[in-house]
Amino acid sequence: MSYLLDSSALLAYYFAEAGGERVRDLLSDESVIVDISVLTMGEFWSRLRAEGWVNVFSAEWAAVSELLSEIHPVSLAVVAKSIELRAAATGRLPQVDALIAATAASLDAILIHRDPHFAAIPEELLKQESLPDKSTLE
Image (cartoon, rainbow, N blue to C red; front, side, top):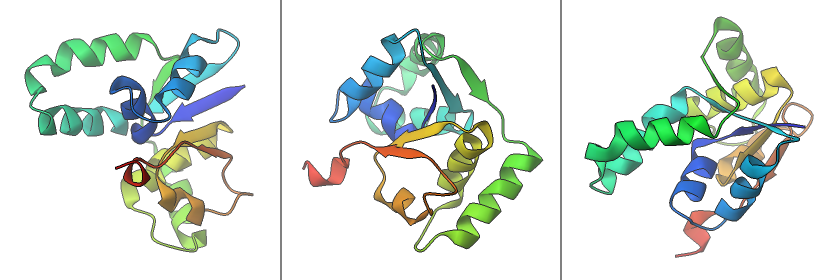
């Protein structure tokens, strides 16, 4: 089984937030592949910066990267797939999230996330698993 973590899922794991335990279980299961998009690196940095932890970014990114099977670049094929997903979406789908979803779809991986706007993508175009939405926990 192959999974791709959205930035929201990786952050849930890293900050031990709701849904983080599911990500932990996936990362510790040697029978599954757990990847991310390179775009998550920027979103991880942004969250650490918001928390005032930007000075530990390099070390923390290196540690997190070691847990993953692969970090995927954004290719022309992924951009084309993101356009297809955004065109088919029934609601708002930000471009960065569309690119991450397109990476998962291109790999035939299950997207793990906690962003409600991914529900706008038709299920025949993207396999996904939703973690608890952080905004509903506050």
